[in-house]
Image (cartoon, rainbow, N blue to C red):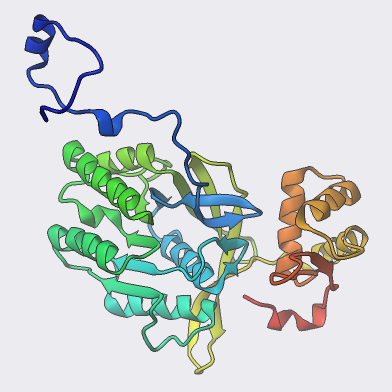
Length: 353
């Protein structure tokens, strides 16, 4: 112990003997008078923050249930600014993506999908995003790569797909706790948001092994992605926030479609799940009555609740659907107001994906 450290109490000889040695706990003592800066989030949905900086988060799902497509969507939203209702809250974000599961050609496809969503060239490197394919690497190599890139590259958001490759045994409680503690400390120390990916046990929502149990305890936000086949054969992926230390966000969904890129390549991309023509027409009628002038978000929500006689959560979903269908649009530069533009059923093939 540092001789300059003065205990805030006077222990007895018996107490000193029981404790053995005295540690300086001053750095860990709560300061009630400290003024904290406002929480910074990496994303928001309908004005609600998701994934605070300086913390760890996790995407969970059964195997082949769209986890990597969800990461693609999230990274694309960060670089584009907003995508499928997820709005990036970081100016000029830097992204680190470490893929430990897929063949390099599949990692390359993920990168091209991200770039296509963001509207940037997909066959060249970009300063804002760094991608490492580390399938087949040893645990120590992967761990060191995470540490090195966070320190040197200084990303705002890190995506590790998947976390199980960062430990020797995901059922080893001590090892799992140690590494998740290291990740949490790394995120806090460098004020970045670290997303991880884990599978769930078959037939349950519980993440696998002690690694999953400890991550469930430590994660600030947990998103679950589930795949469901519709009667018409289309596959819908639904994303739900199952746990959070912050405010809850709404469920959202996406589908996968082959879209032709600028260079003639076809890519499977996460796209909105559009409602059918009848529902679109009904939604258009509601928005025409609700959005009679340029309106701020909260005012529009109040009008939708009044016109459609729905609760606030449903009103937000209807606003998001109207945005996806091109019924309303938002001025994101000056007034940030929404305005009604009307449904164009003849132009659905050109809707933004």
